[in-house]
Image (cartoon, rainbow, N blue to C red; front, side, top):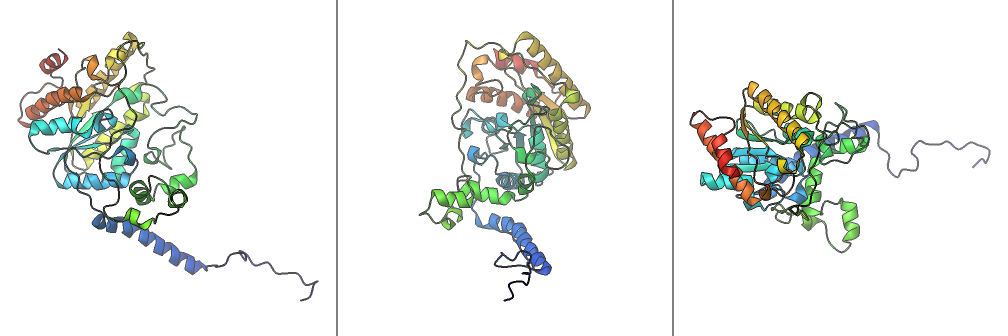
Length: 374
């Protein structure tokens, strides 16, 4: 070799295998086909038979592929679907103590399905139903409106600083900027591979395969994803405890007005989306634990609630305003305990029966409210 002859540098010469442009296209097409086909095939392989009182397990709260599958199952069975946040899901109660359970108890059959998602909020719910609730069409839907998400600029995702919040993969990734959401491009693109998160949650304890194999060096990964090996059952939110009675100062919350609220706009978009898909929507509001609010904050909340209900009624929606429960029946600011859900189910059931039979039902059943609070 001539030592003075310059060495020609080949691009990517350190790689053991180099692909031509055509080979790259072939590889991309292959992986795209696998990514599209496998989730559909997996539905036929993995056993999933949700029974009465089923809800998305807390440990799989971010498994939106499972939510999509559950939505398909209950929609095919003609259930009335309850959609909302942790209030519907039942953060402080077992699955047989939720609002859905008590409604089914009054119906005498499995007529209602719990599509609540722990930690969700209107912006996330709108993304969830848009992308993972396509099967929810032509159904009766009870949609919960929780104004607690308007209780501060942080809860409304209005602040400019980075804020950690639940379900970031459900917010818009590329359109409609949310200032406090500053995920990397790779994280945003990774949202498209939702089915892989299902396998991580059910087979690998919400860890990716490389890290899981390091933690379990003597365990074969394949049996973890075989049918019947995953955890699709119900579990309760770990570590939550009802608040202690007494001794807590009243809260003064910096409420966000409806006109400037991101969460309220998202809720209206969700209503429009559900109705555009042929669903009959009944909105249930509250019941926020007003016992914990100071006088000014309570007055602002009631004004916002009145404005929201008026707007929804003008849209032609049936609205049931859940009554304020006795203080002892709340676990915290917005979550009832078992007996609280039981009382709410009684009032909601009566309202649904009245509207179904064409009876003149007031949007706020005052007699039921008085009876429940006593």
